[in-house]
Image (cartoon, rainbow, N blue to C red; front, side, top):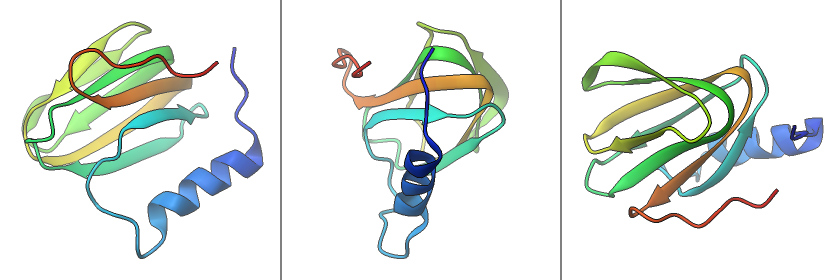
Length: 107
């Protein structure tokens, strides 16, 4: 099980909320406490893939009437422009990447 420290959680939150942060999705590995939210606006032309690597995630997208629940190993392609919201149903990690063959997240 991974451990996300309070300091790293606040640092991640601040980096996404600060005024100069880009509204487009960034790629990388993200960790969420149970109940925590992560959201981004995606353009749909970025070729982004979201993969649950640990825990359980609930996702909703503006342009998709279906909500998604991802377990470890499950992947969702983000092919439409809009806002995505991810919530951890239990402590979770996920990877957001461009392309079909993402590199692994560090442990």
